[in-house]
Image 1 (cartoon, rainbow, N blue to C red):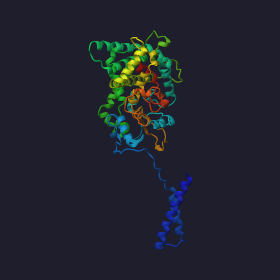
Image 2 (cartoon, rainbow, N blue to C red):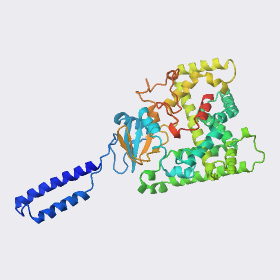
Image 3 (tube, rainbow, N blue to C red):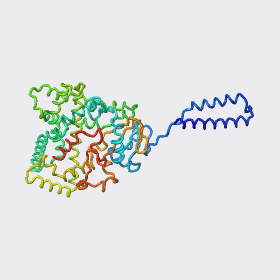
Image 4 (cartoon, rainbow, N blue to C red):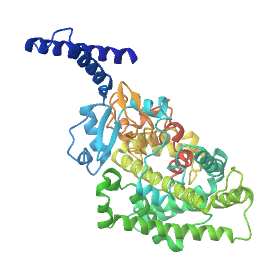
Length: 479
């Protein structure tokens, strides 16, 4: 670097000196030995020293044209994962965009995702600071949005050990089987009456019931419609971008159109609901046995014992409960909905799955979780559904904590990274006939969704991989 700077200075001074000498000689202002020449050359040298070196030109990934002020926001469309996929087919698996003031990197291939989630995982370990997330998730106190560090590690450990470990997930088997049996009875009753069954509502209700019983200890049927609407609004707002996060000088728009008021309202109502849940547990006199405690019981006990090295505030407990619902309900039943849609579209796959169910059940009226390990075609159907329809198509965004090189391109600090899992699952360089629903591709295939194969990362990968993956898959496979 020093040699390069010295070379530029010398070249610059030499060029200036020669030009000046020629000019002075042409006009015969003074002779070569004139004292004025000495001071002139000294001044040129001084100016050359303080002249700022030219800024290195960044090598950015290819990019579509940008509009003034908004950048590429107009390119997103109503289904961003599809719009970004179309753009990536023109500009490549690493694509540079700009959302207002924010630089954005869009990743659309398995190799590029590996660079982000494995090679440079620590550089992209944190998510962006978004106003909606801050309000709804208690100022980033939950596991999903908390900054990487000791607090995040401890909160994640509490969730995994007390809710999402293999042992705990297995202990919820009775709950899952009971709720599944109730769903089957509902279907039989409606079908025998000749009435149609809304599978979306059934999947949603059943999943919510399972999560409520696991996390809160009981179903909240008396407030079913209110709670369902509140949770729906919460999830919708979490996925809605706030214009002020990308164009700060337009932040006032969210005040005028009522968006901020809606966020505040939902946040307040959720907070009141969660306070009621916690108070109900605090006031409960007859505690469950150790293996029958729900998640709130565990959190309150951890708070009382202070076993994590620092006090757990009530606000953290509420944030963790919200994580369980935001990650364990909508995303879970969405996979079931898509799986059933694809099976109805592909009668051959449906018949193959029915054949396997009859074989494994051995004449029993129902399938238990103990039978699932023998249902290989079912697992292939779920994998193929996750490939084509990941529950969060662009995963959770991340932010670069420093300047970094990715595949020869400069990614500057503060760049928001969007990994398009939907596009990766349809990449023809990774999948044969990528647009077709072919569960057989996963029979005798080592590719899995646990974060090690970047061709299939519906739950993410690396340190921030979804900790509830196993619980979600147990629910999906049983239903």
